[in-house]
Amino acid sequence: MIIGIDDTDSKDGMCTTYLCAVLIDELQEYGSITGLPLLMRLNPTIPYKTRGNASVAIQVETDRPQKVMDHVISRIGSLAEMDSETTNPGVVFIPDKDYERTKHSLGEYFRRAVTGVLSIDSAKELVLELDIPSKSFKNGRGLIGALAACGAMQNCGWDHTYEYIAYREQNVWGSPRLVDKTSIHKADMETYPDTWDTVDHANDLIVCVPHSPDPVLFGIRGKSVEDVTHAAVLIESEPIERYVVYRTNQGTDMHLIPLTNISDIREMHSYIIEGTVSRTPVTIRGGHVIFAIRDDKGDEIDCAAYEPTKNFRILVRKLIAGDRVVVYGSVGGNTLNIEKIQIKSLAAKSETKNPVCPSCEKRMKSAGSGQGYRCKKCRTTADSTVLIEVDRDLDVGLYEVPPSARRHLAKPLVRGDMQDCAVFSSR
Image 1 (cartoon, rainbow, N blue to C red):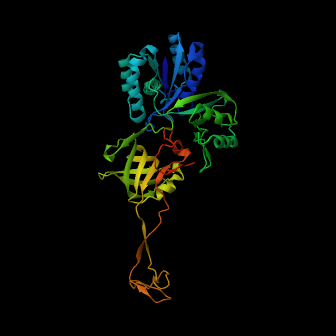
Image 2 (tube, one colour):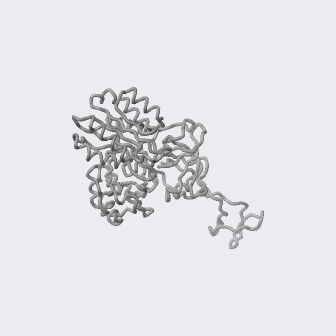
């Protein structure tokens, strides 16, 4: 059977992937785990998420299915952060006899959960419609992610990466993590570009070690099981209680919807959209950089490089009205939060300069208010300033935010997703 689980954590602790790791060990009493577990990132704009809006799925071969279901439900009850108002677990079980019957519906639900906004009622209705075993706790919001993770397991043709997650011993949860920074840099240097988002070199930040009070010690993302494992074994740290390698949709851009018209944009969705810069970037309070783009129909939307994107904002500040760009990101508050930007063409930029003396080729000086310009050496004169085209100090190409600001689903440029386009990685 396939088991999908979601929403067992809170901002105060726990992690749904940790519960999955525990079950991988414990369920072997009743059978065997087949294949890799899944770590699925769903719509990143959903306000109810704890951190990265993740759900998990595992596949078990067993001749004791009821024992498996009872055990999973019991462990969710004992490990989930039930006292938290925002924790509403859900678990779904898909027996092998129901694989084909439910495969299409759950596959579609999975894709909608990554790109759209789904209700708790939609999940409960689908459970009833498909007549599949499930268990919800409290308001049952976790059923959404649990169903989506099962759909991902049944329909596995999606782009994927891998993550090796190491977990802390329970007696140190909530305390500062002890991970050797030098060994992390070594692991990064030895395995990049086959692993990524381990270190943010431009901002001198360790990315693979979280700061929240959950059981995760570190996580290494990469293109294969071998690559992430190689990097992980190089890291020196406090004792590791257990680890799991997940197959995941992280780093795939699965959440992005290609769009032509800005008028079709909806809140809490993520898009790829092309337009022309219509309002020059400005830096607002908090260090956020805001500009606007206009599509070919004349509709506009604000785009933002928020303060956590750090050095990426330097690039954005160089844009001017008339530049043609493609922006990638999520919409909230009628503003698109940029994850990547492709600069397709640059508008000409001119500056007003004093005229050049035709004799000595030096710039003239003002002769006084309303009196034009004069070369003191040659005595030549001119009536007005001239417009000079200046270098933009900016290249066309595809740029990304730094690893420390990257969303789980955003595809890093090191994965090589663009053809015939200069790529400027944030590494």
